[in-house]
Structures are given as structure tokens and as C-alpha cells.
Amino acid sequence: MPSKIIVLFFLISSFCSAQNANLANMYFERGDYVLAKSLYEQLYKKNDVRRDYFKRLLSCYQALENYEEATSLLIKHQKKFRDQTNLWVEIGYNFQLQGKTEEAEINYEKALKYIENDPYQGNVMGRAFEENHLTDYALRSYKRAMELNPQLNLDLNVAYLYGEKADIENMFDSYLNLVEKNEKYYATVQRYAGRFITDDSEDPNNVLFRKLVLKRLQKTPNNSWNKLLSWLFTQQKDYNKALVQEKALFKRNSENLFRIEELGDIAFYDNDYVTAQEAFSYVLENTKDQNSILNAHYYLLNVAIKTAVTKKEIQTVEEQFQELFTEYGRTFTTLDLQMAYADFLTFTKNKPEKAIVILKDALKETTSDYQHGNFKLKLGDVLVYTNRFNEALINYSQVQTDLKNSSLAQTARFKVAQTSYFKGDFKWALSQLKVLKKSTSQLIANDALELHLLISDNIIGDTLHTSLKMYAKADVLAYQNKTQAAIDTLNAVLKKFKGGAIEDETIYKQAELYTKIKKYNLAEGNYLQLIELDKTGILVDNSYFKLAELYQNNLNNRDKAKEMYQKIIFEFPNSIYLVEARKQFRKLRGDVLN
Image (cartoon, rainbow, N blue to C red; front, side):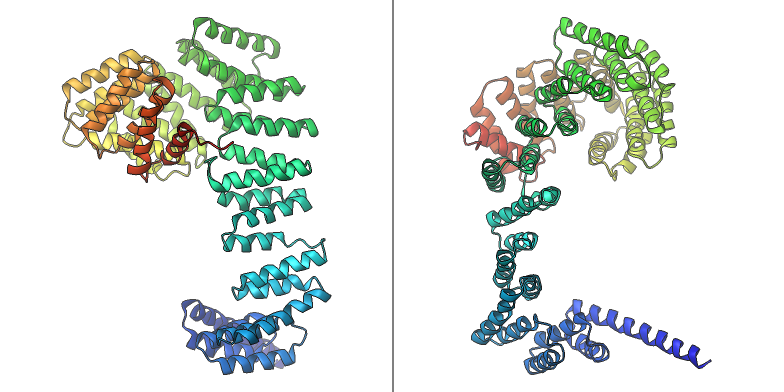
């Protein structure tokens, strides 16, 4: 029985200490140092081994300017724990807070002397200086320790401190020192340096980082330097430059082509078809792996589809598909190619019925729920193309049900909303879009918000929703690649509902379609009309950016392009196009740094 009482006593005592510690920490964090001091005095008295109790009690005394009590605590603690060499830093800092700079420096130097005899003390002293915001002394500690013992790796600490001082060059250099000592730190450097890198190749930090890495690459070839350059160029969307680095890496260590495939994928989805084609052509030239070969063909065919202009080029794509199916068959190994072919048949060759047959056959070959869901979505897309909206909705809804809470389910929900909008069921579309505005996928969330605004802005005051139904019809025609018919329908909307809420969206949509069929002057006229219509409208910065692209890429008017980019830079600081506008403006001005 007595033993049980003792155990119970210790349990209650431990619980009370924990409660007091939590309370003390809360008061301290809140800046209520009087109450915190009282509790830390009790905690320290019971357990003076706990460094956090000692340090917090000391900080409370100092915050309350009770320097005599702080000094008394330091003397008492140092007398009992003589091996805690970092106390010289605390003693020095206590002097500094009292304005006794000379005494403070004497104690700091005492602390630093310990490193001379034992470089491992560099980490101890460095942290003590850091805790007291003595950045320069902390740097001296870490750097001296590494000078005395090159095996010590404190560059991450050094880099962090240089970052605190906004000394970006030395910070980057310290991160690169990590890699120089051990290539395994590549990902760490990428993560930390990435906080200071933007997608603007002319940003001073980007330029500096590139120069520092190139300098090291020239001095000592190292895979990590190529990887870091490739990473930097990818952040800047300079995919062709990234590919040069990846090829160099592969030639040095030709184990696999995964990094080149990954870069080709990124370039493709960012519409850099030239780099994507070069990347996957390189893969084909250097692999015998069937999966890599089929993946490369998949992307190369998609590039060919995206860039095909003439009937001959389209026919060449058709022949390439058939050659691949002849060689590899229509089995589970070629499912990606079959999906790409169905898409090609529908949206390029206008043969949706043939695509539907292919997709239904392919569904039987799928080997996972996710793969099955992907084919269901594509089948739904083709059914929408043929105006079979209800059948499409069934397929999309099945994916939503079968793959709940997945990214594919969110895509399916958006397609349900979009298809409901196409068929004029605006109420149901809005209910789906309301959920999707909080989607974890930023792309889906943005698309959902855009469609939600379009619908909600144009059903107010129009019980029959006539204008929106006509606009949605044009949207369907555009989806079906019936571009001229879509433009004509939008013209009808503009005539019938001039001055209405739908007008600005209609002008903007029509401008996009004019650009698609290369009627650039008509597109220009629409964008200018939209700006004139409402200089504060939500589509104005979009219009300026689209105009800039037209002038730069299609109408050969660099001065006008610069003017449009400037409009965004100076008049729309919150525009999503700001970074790209700044980048393109500098490029046109001729001050791009290579």
C-alpha cells in the first residue's frame, strides 16, 4: 500500500509540474514576464538541469531589467555547471543588455576561445550566440569551427545566418558548400535556395545563383551543379537550357532517362513543344526500355497533333498511330496511346463515333480504378463533343462516386458542372462549382471560380437565362472546334444583348477565337473595344496581356507590345500576369541577361 501512495504522489507531482511549465510558457510567449518569472523560479528550483527553465527564467529577469537577479542566477548556475561553456555567451549578453559593451566583448571572446581547443564547441557557441541574436559572433563560431575541422558541416547554419543578414551571395555560397562536401545535400539546397528564386530569369537572385553555380561547375565538374542549373532553368521556364544540363548529366552517368522524361513532360504541359520534342526524341535515341519508348512516342505524337497545320501533317500523325498499334498492339501496354488516339480522332479529325468505340474497348483493358476513371472522363469528353450531355454526365458522375476525394473526382465534378452549363442547367452547375472553388487543385479552383462568376453574373434579372444560354451554345461550338460557328453565335449575342452583363465576356471570348483562326486584327479590335468598354473591368488586365502577346508574336509591333506590358506593370500590380509581363517587357527592351 505505501508503494502505491508513493507512485501516486509522483504522478500528481509530475502532472502539476507539466501544468506549471505549460502555463509558464504561455505567459512567456504572451510577454507576461512577471507571471512567467514566478512560475519559472519554481520550476528551476525543482529541476535546475533543465536548460529551457534556466534560459527562460534568465530571459524573464532581463526582460524586466532585473539585472542583479539575472547576474546572481548566472553566477549560481555557472558555479554548479562548470562544463556549460556556452554560459560565457549568456554572461556577455547580460552585460550587453546593461550597456556594458566592453565587458560583454570580453566574455564573448572567452566563449570563442573554447573553439580553438575543441572545434565541436563551434556548434554549441554558435547556437548560444544565435539565441541571443548575435549573428556576427554566431557566424564567427561556425566558420572558425569548420576552419579548424573541415569534416564539420555547419554550412546550413551559416547559410541561414547570412539569409538573416540579407547577404544573399554568401548565403548561396554556403548552401553550395554543403553540396561540394556531400552531393546528397542537393535536394536540401534546392529547397532552401528556392525560397529566394523566382520564375524571372532576370531577378538579381536568379542571376547571382546561376553565376555562383557556373563558377563551381567550371572549377570542378559535379553532377549536382548540373542538377541545380537544370532546376534553376526549369523554375525560369527556360526548358531548352535545362535540357542541355540534363543531357550533360546523362552523358556522364547514363543510368536512366527519368530526369529527361520528367523535363519533357513539364515542357509539354507548359506549351514548349520544341523542347518537349527534343527531349523525347533524345529518349528514343538512348533507350531500349519499352515503357520509355511508348511514353516518348505518346508525347511526340501529342506534340505533332498540337503543331499540325496541314492535312498532310495530320495524315502523318494518323499513320504514326497505326504503325505503333501494329507493332505493340491495342493492349494494356498501349492504353495511353489509345487515349491520345481517341482524342485525336475526336478533336482533330472529327470522328467521335470511332473514338467512342476505341475508348469502350480500352476500358476493358484498364488495370486500376484510377486508369479506368481516366478513360471514363475521356469518354465523357467525346460524348460532350457529340452533344450527348446526359450520357457524358453519367460517366463523369461514376468517376466522382468511384474515386471519392481523389484529384480525378474533382476533375469529374468540374466536368459535371461544365456539361450542366453547356446544356443550360445553370442551377446544378453552380452547386457543383461552389464546392470546387475550394478545390485543392489550384487549376480546378481557378476554372471553377471563372465559370461560377460567368454564370452567377449573367442569370440575375434574366429568369429565362436567354443571353447565357446563347453564350453557352457558343462555348459548346468552340469546344467542338466549330470555331467560325462559335464566333457567329457570339455575334448574335452581342447584337441581341448589347450593353448587357454578358457583353464583356462575349467580346473577350470572341477575341480568343479570332486568335485561334489567325484573324489577329479582329482579335486586336475586340481587346481594344473591351478595354474601352470598362477600364476597371475584371477582364481589362487580361486584355492588355493578350494584346501584348498579339503585338509581340503575331502583329510584329514590339513598341505596342512593350506599351501593353507596361500597362500591366504600372496599373495592375495584383494581376496574375504581372511577373510574365515584367519578364517579356525586359526581353523586348533588350536587357535580358544570359
